Image (cartoon, rainbow, N blue to C red; front, side, top):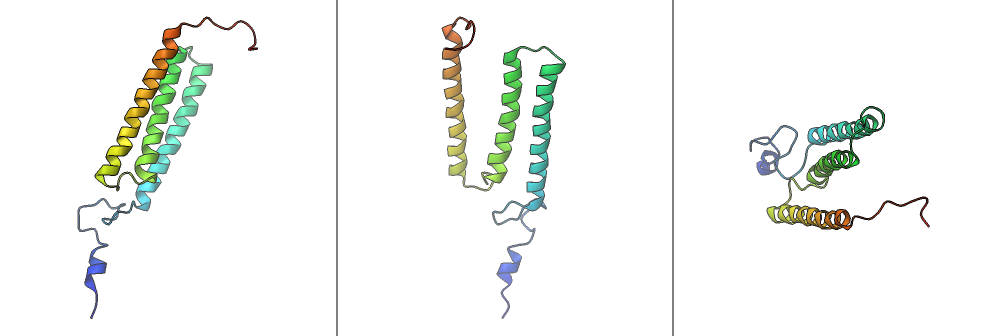
Length: 127
């Protein structure tokens, strides 16, 4: 007697995208597009650095903000697809999101303290 449940579970009958399998795996097509996206963001990072150093004299805080935005996009792609957060349980997704919320709070507190100190600029090399 043939087992038909195994072959039916691997089909595309649940409205899942062509590159993704319905049983909790991310497909090769999704990995390929994610990789291409990461390559594009890497070239955008290098291009933003080059423009900042050679074309426009933008404030340093704006350059750091742009670099952090690009890095955040790359981090999201890596965590969501390569670390399988997309197909994880809802509880795992909530805890991963909370980790990033607390990381943002940490950055806000540390940078708030850093900018509030008003340290004088250093003269000469560091001791």
